[in-house]
Amino acid sequence: EKIRAGATIVDVRTPEEFEEEHYPNALNVSVEEVQTRLEEFGDRGKPVIVYCATGARSAYAARVLKLSGFKDVTNAGGLYDMPGA
View 1 (cartoon, rainbow, N blue to C red):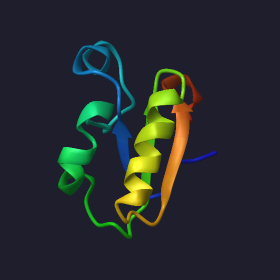
View 2 (view 1 turned 30 degrees about the vertical axis):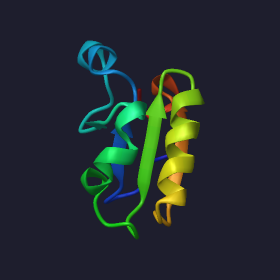
View 3 (view 1 turned 180 degrees about the horizontal axis):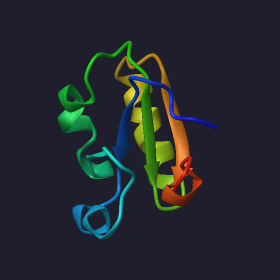
View 4 (view 1 turned 60 degrees about the vertical axis):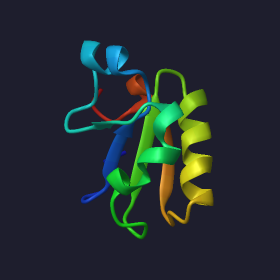
């Protein structure tokens, strides 16, 4: 599966985990900060793909984004579930 063109990819792990390893061009917004940093996710009609280590934090983040009006949110699961990771 390929990442859709124009999608915002967001790593919702901690900055320390992100620093160690992350998906190319991913934005890092830790799960605790998703609600307060919504403007960083861009246009609410644009696709957003979230991932973490196992898929649990990204499932929570995806729910927050959907409840905040983002139309096209995908929980990709863990970093190693990402295409080409």
